Length: 170
Image (cartoon, rainbow, N blue to C red; front, side, top):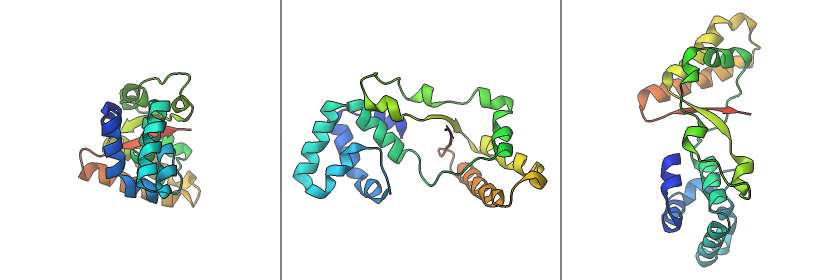
């Protein structure tokens, strides 16, 4: 989805927003500035979209990436989950946000809310749960729920080969 968003021109981005308006509306908070004009009607919404796009195309695109490319709630990573992935040699060869998202201009607001992340497949996510299982006796009780969430993410990645997880650096 990131590559799709980045490849769109103004009209294509507008059509993309229209096709995802329900998903954007459902978000509790959003980075994309275009949706704030939605409640004022379709004409105002379209006018404000193109205004925002002309003003800072990079900000609009980064906002859409942040709002739509990462689904679900973030799962906090405890020490052992992080070590399971980051200490494995394969973590050095994964695709990262730097491979996908261009470096935005300094004047663009996009530069200030671009997240750094690694793109993980099911094997990488499974490294996290395996490490948590190995060190189960050292985990806090609340980490068991996070382990289940990570297991669900790994299962989803295995079931859909195009689905990826993001390890977002905070």
